[in-house]
Length: 145
Image 1: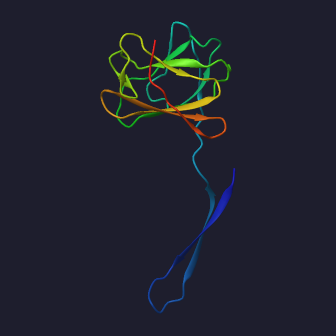
Image 2 (image 1 turned 90 degrees about the horizontal axis):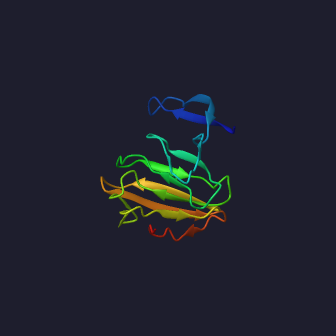
Image 3 (image 1 turned 135 degrees about the horizontal axis):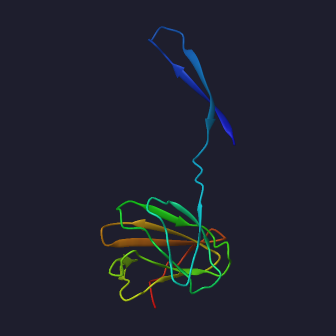
């Protein structure tokens, strides 16, 4: 863990000498611990409140169900540990991913070498953003059967 030393200069008045305060043990950034979830052909639900998932799928037909819609909630699915890819569905089929209703049983395909971030934008659905292992924004796509 990288530590930084923050130097805080406080000037109590125009004519007073500056006072130095040191704030050691400050860390950089935020680290989230991902929850490993195994995708199943019958679906696996991402628990409410989960923000980072390490997906593990043994078949490209396996899928995850996103948690219930909470506007502003962001769920990031890291690179697939199973290296096969998977699919994602909203909690309720009438909800949308990238402005497409997922009725009946439409799902968004995610390649094995792709990080995908879902942001709940309203009570109607999610926006998905995909990033390749090279750090390039990929076409997010639309749900299909």
